[in-house]
Image (cartoon, rainbow, N blue to C red; front, side, top):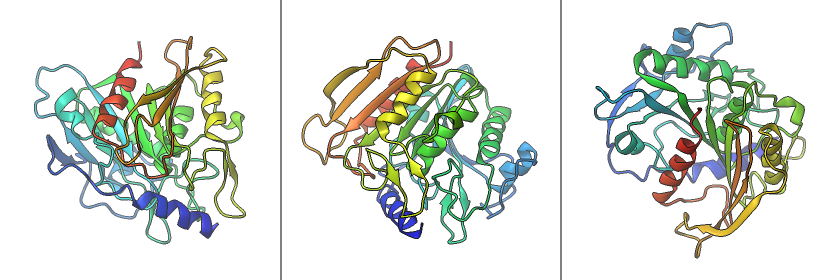
Length: 312
């Protein structure tokens, strides 16, 4: 298992650098927080204030929220071993450009001091700490909503690597609160029965087909870890849950989102005819590794997907 853990950490650390030189909007700590980010573990039985006080989040607010109406909320979930200060996917500027609230909650430190999300049987509670991150992230959404005018029809989750596994988990278990997710370099449960959302959820997966950490064709972390599905099987699961047409529309060379890769490297696989509220879409980054360096255009494409799938 440690081999898989090391590979996941190595894949995640490359995406930590924050390419934005300054914050375009006001950055605040959790209103409920009582201090710095401690190592306390959130338990399922705690109140919203207890859960958030144990793990305060970082919130990027629009410059002016007065009179603008309810704001969309984007929950950004970091990768294994990362910290919440990173905005590698250029999402924080959406606070200014789109009037969104962008919240960065932290995972729990494991026994090695590396922050993780307890997302699926594969990733990434490697030391069996049993953290209930579904309860914690529901509490984060509740806490932001208690202090800001959040549009409940536009609560979105964007996750990378371990955070992508957690975004998938929230689509499974928190479908009553989450309208759409974007999963970058992560997949869902292998067993379809482990994911039974109460409502349809729009799902976009973004994955490099040369990812050596979360492999495109599926695999396991280390030699004794549980299996995770292929990227295709993961999005086909959402196709089925969202009652989409069985055969997708495929557009090769749809986007040029990764400056280090030649040409329009990203293909789009989109399932049409989904039930209201549902979507299943895959962006395959040809030649992309685990920690793809995206251009600033990536955030606008992601935002377009999210807003297209606000709950009706």
